[in-house]
Image (cartoon, rainbow, N blue to C red; front, top):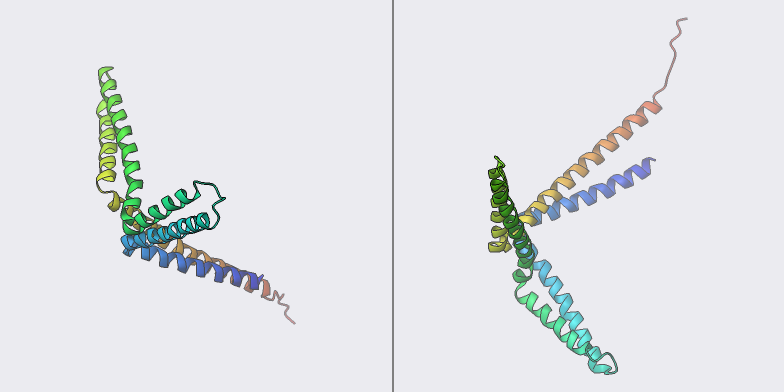
Length: 192
């Protein structure tokens, strides 16, 4: 039990410290982290495309589109490597468009409920406006939104690491207390 608890504690501590370190990196350097991640993805795509093109020229009996597909993958990899922010910016733009569409739908519903005599129609209007504002922010400042999201993830990882360290510490403390109670000698006092 004691050895298992020590191994579990060591695993938790290592995992927690890695979470804290990654969280700090994401919190302090979100743009650089995005850049490195995209470049790693790009290098993978470039290698994959290059291998597909090479295997097409070495063995032309492969599917006729294999060479073209390899070239496309290679070009996408080069594009991502040269402009990593463009690929990352697509995610918030898509989310922003969805938020804007929902905001416009909510705006229409707010106007319709006003026509139907609902007195608190303005609350729906406020909700619609907030959705529209968030949507426009995601579209206009896509890279900033990704950096903000990575910073939030960094904070969550730091919290996770610190909480894991605390939980591991409490578990070991509880196990020690249990062991001490089990080893305590229970003696009856008898006066002679």
